[in-house]
Length: 137
Length: 137
DNA sequence: CTATAATCCTATCGGTTTACTAGGTTTTAA
DNA sequence: TTAAAACCTAGTAAACCGATAGGATTATAG
Image (cartoon, rainbow over all chains, first blue to last red; front, side, top):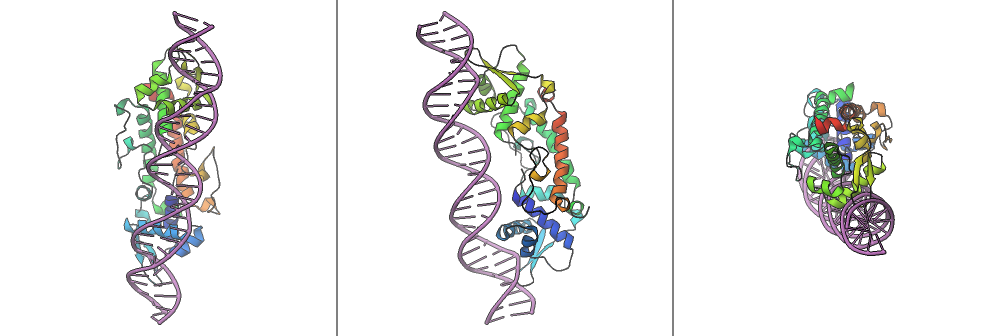
C-alpha cells in the first residue's frame, strides 16, 4: 500500500506543476485545495525540498516551486524518496537490497523469482512516467 | 512491502508443491525446512485451508496438501487472500475498491492515473504466474 | 484404551510504523 | 513593525505486524 505521505507528495507536486506560474505556491493553498492536513503536508514539502525536487522561499509571498521541469521528474525518483524501495521484498530491491534471514539460496526461492518480475513491471511503469505525464496527460 | 505472512504462505505452498507426494505435509516440517516460526506458520496454513488452497488432515500422520494442481493456482489469488489488495491504493483496487476521502474527482487525480498503470502491470505478472511456474521453472 | 502427534482456535503482546498534532523559531515582504 | 510564510523538533494515538502462549480437538498407532 502506498502511504498517504507519498500520495500527498505526488498530489502536491502535481498541483505545483499544473499551476506553472512564476511565483511560488504556498503549502496552505495546496493543503486546502487538495484536502491535506497542513502540518503534515509541510513536513512532506520539506522532504521534497531536501531531496532536490522543490525549492522554497520563506516569508510573506513565499512558498514552493519546482526545480526541474515536470518532464524531467521521474516517478521512480519521487517514490523512492517518499516511500522507499519500489520492490515488494528487500531481497529484490535494486536500491535498498537486503538479504533475507530465512532463505539460504535466493535462486531457489519462489518468492524471489516472482517478486523480481513484479519489481521489473513496476519499475517499467514508474520509470516511464514523469510528473508531466501524470499531471497533463 | 510484502508481509511475512504472504511470503511464508507462498513458500509453504511451494514446498508442498515440490514435494508432490501422496501423503500430507506437516507444518512442523515446513517450518523447520524454511526457517519459519512454527506457530506463525500454523495460522497461515489455516488461512490457506479456509480459503480453499489447502486441505488438511488432523491427527498423527496428518498435515496439509494442495487441493488444486499447482498450474491451476494463480498468484493473484494467493496474494489477494494473504496480503489483500494488489493495488497500491484502494481507489484503483478491483477487488477492494474504496473511494478516497480527499479527491473529489478520480479522473483528475494524478496518483490515480499512475497507480492504475502500476496495478495493471502487477496484475499482469501475478496473473500469468501460477504456483507451478514459480515452484518448478 | 491410551499415548502421541497433528491441526485448530483464541487471546495476547511488544515493537514498529503511520498519520497527524503541537508549539514553536526563523525569515521575508509589505 | 506586523504578518505570513517556511522551517524545526517533539510527541502521540491508533493501527498493524510478527510472534508467542496455551490450550482444545481430532486421528492414528500400539
